[in-house]
Amino acid sequence: MKIEEMSFEEAYSKLEETSTKLEKGNLSLEESLALYEEGVALSKRCEELLEKAELRVTQLTPGQPAEPEEVTELEDDDFI
Image (cartoon, rainbow, N blue to C red; front, side, top):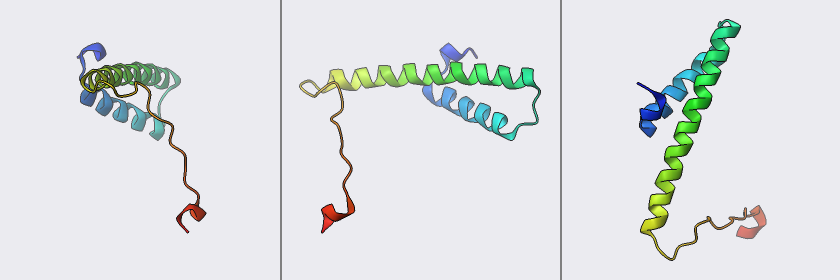
């Protein structure tokens, strides 16, 4: 199956597989490069699908800000 035809779940699963193979090592330079290139393409596919999903959610929630609000971290002394 072509990467551009994969669902998010398929692309993400394949990306995890690819990452695991690269982390294990035991590959030739050419094999590593091929897997890296595949991983980049899979990552881009996942990002594309997530952006489309975000757009759909934004369109379904009119009046909501397009950008998420900035979240500040709480310090331990904020709870005292």
